[in-house]
Image (cartoon, rainbow, N blue to C red; front, side, top):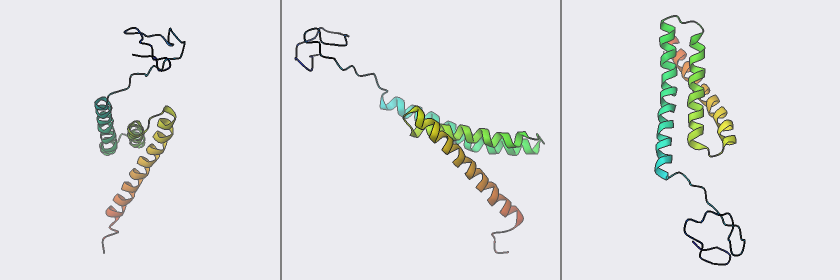
Length: 131
């Protein structure tokens, strides 16, 4: 490796912050994740998203069948939080964006749940069919 300022050959495996000859600051680049590691991480978060997105309503229905009481309201909220923040982990790069988008995605998943419940209630009531 050569100094970017004076072009003097630096010793092999030199880990100093500046050039010993001219004192120019050497840029050290942090190790970044390989694209394969990022893709694998995203696959894990996609699995978490789909498991939470479909798992919470299914568990909610099972809890309703067993008359679990207030647990019915807790499960979809917990599922929406897991689904929303796993989406945020996939699509954001900074911690601040992760928190903000995690909250927005969680609200979005809750809106989807409410929409599904609304359409389900319409179907059970017999509306929306041409009756």
